[in-house]
Image (cartoon, rainbow, N blue to C red; front, side):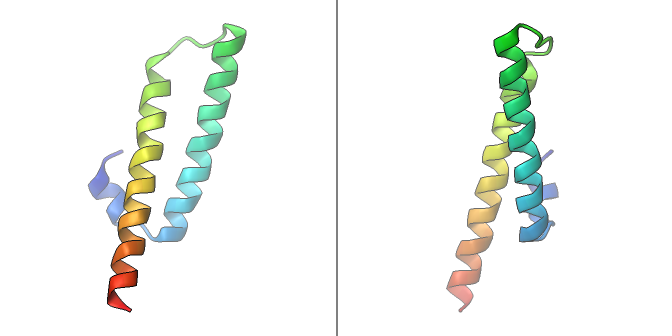
Length: 68
């Protein structure tokens, strides 16, 4: 997932994406704690995707605030 792809989405779609990513991050942490996690790199990518979505949401909110 890249920033250009996220920038084309609506804020509602981004919030939904954020919820899904946070659920996945929780599941990955749970798997790591129980020793079932095989792909440890996935935790890093999910964490970065969460940050990416939050950044785009904040940019959209700032743009909407400056227009009003």
